Length: 346
Image (tube, rainbow, N blue to C red; front, side, top):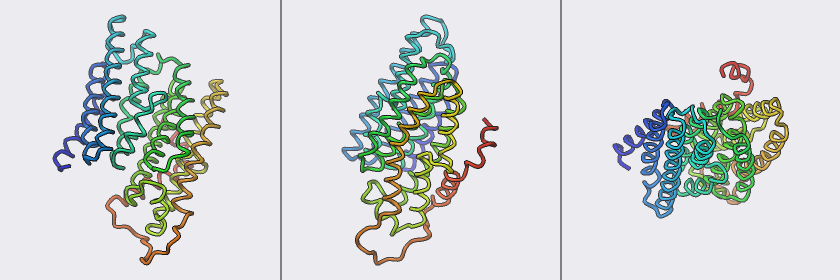
């Protein structure tokens, strides 16, 4: 991809995201989502590999269907209420259609099938964008309409996403697919709390984005695309493998790491809302995710390859993203003691 194309697609992605998260009108929000989709398509297809082309077509078809459904739901709401304002979704049917459309864009169960396949067919950098930045506009729309959403539908989607994200990640060997199911599982946690504490959903998304960015950048530095290549990471970059292990455990939600904070707050809020069964179910289902995070940590740090290497261990890397990885890793591991300050800010 030429630098000019890369610049154009990056600016379009930022423009589409900004338009959607700052708009009050459904048509402007829909326009921003369309710009986002058109900006991401060249990024997925840039390698010209058959898997990349297949992933591009899947992504386009799913996003086009979701956008059409979103436009139809907003038009149906405007027809019945005379309002194009995003926060004025007053009728039941448009609300259900809009929830379905946003669930398709986010990759919530049962509209998750496209997400692992698209991530597997693209590069680690594009997979990072698909897992983090492109999730922000649909999540913002879900936040703006959270007061009119169906609690039963959203709770069912949340529990199903947490269950399937953990269950399907167990037998995967490709790191991108594992992180895709990790994303689905985390989206389940966000969907569970969005009706009762929308700001906590945003905090969870920010922390998830930070931890996932750290993992993706580390894997991109070591070129680890499956579990077999993760096994030789320790012989090449021991320090990076150690910090990756801690970041993965943080992503799993183990105390005293940063990832424990959003899970702890979500369980506390669900219990306060007298939704103890929901809290207990998603807490138990998070153990499935913990298993495959532990497996990734085991492969990256504890497992050594059978053959000895002839080169020196690389304790320092000259990669230009190493400073960013170091900063993100520190934040992904050490923010839990600052939780009172974080809670005060939201």
